[in-house]
Image (cartoon, rainbow, N blue to C red; front, side, top):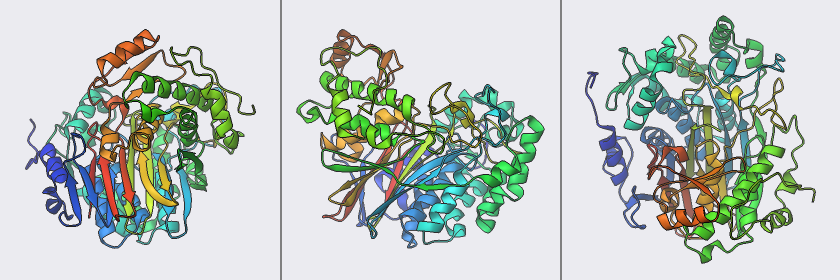
Length: 562
């Protein structure tokens, strides 16, 4: 262990949050308005219930940031923006100011849903034919996080930028306790981190990787956050932070210029909509993958999943086959709608889904799945779900693509830049073009029942995002699980281009053996494997006026409510 002042055990802190004792230590309340339920079929993390507001994120200190804003009278959007800025500080491997995301918002009083697209964008210089690396200056796309969060707050929030950014600034300045999860990620990537001095300065300030229990401070990031809080989005896209990013890019052979940053805009879009067994689905539109989640669920409507056990061979087979067909169409049809004509209505058609369902063989694994004819992925992502007492909900997923993104930090900024340029495809609607937004699999989703918000769900996990979202929704709708049960339930994943079906080790051995007999190649992961991301979710019961939240033990997830 290194010495770095007073240590606090992160796992003890997280346990305090979970059982309700840590709420006072973290500046939030637990008691008559927030309860921690130990029921629900032996979940690893107790489910949290509350009446007035709730935040579920991948880190307890980010959840605390959002809850602080809710308790100060902010709405779900205010709290989402506070949580999003804070998670960029305390989960720096996964997201931050140098990244991007997508947000789906349900506005209860207007009975209206909107999506904020703050996906990153290719620089404007035409570099057709360039081979895009997975790290370094050429891997960096124009970041969207600051523009997207500022747009959401300005249009749908009620608090000032200074108020919602205050928790993030304090976390960056004072530091936070490194968890075992974050420590392991730093250690795993230390050789690459050590080659970038501004990044190593943050993660290995004494020349060795920060260990669990030590404090990570990022004073340069605190200064950058203060500048944005005082001057708004233009500081990042046209002011001194833009100067710092463009200067570093020019010095190291990157493509992003001040003109690229100045040209960037977040975009308000309509969410994609569907239904699954009477539950309305509002999910993230192209260039991301809400369509694929809905299409896969549409296929599954042809089968009675509730008749079988959730982890039965029959159900895993049907979900796997639906996912294969959804993934094939994702690769063929989904891209930036400003550059490609995406057949949204046809891909979401129930009739089209039924034709795909009829193609699924019931006794064997499919081979050679290709895209249908509707006319007839990286682990470094994070998700937040937020709900307030007025019935508003937010589902927000943001990322820097790979862990530590491009592994670049413009000196003096503390900002880790993304490596989104690696996400272009060699053909189809996701091929590179200047100013284009690349496709990814993120799919923040809100569910409605009887016209009211029922759930906010989302997860990181690269291509596993789509499979996890489908599993979460079927667990809630078909099997009546609580949100914590749905999140902790063993996961699996396959797609049209995968040779194996990947399964968590908690899936029954009999099911795994039966899948093999059906022709599946299997790859068994750990019990709660980070490969499958870290989902967060909130479920609302308007009749009881209660919110219940679930957090993922695969990461450092935490739910706080009051």
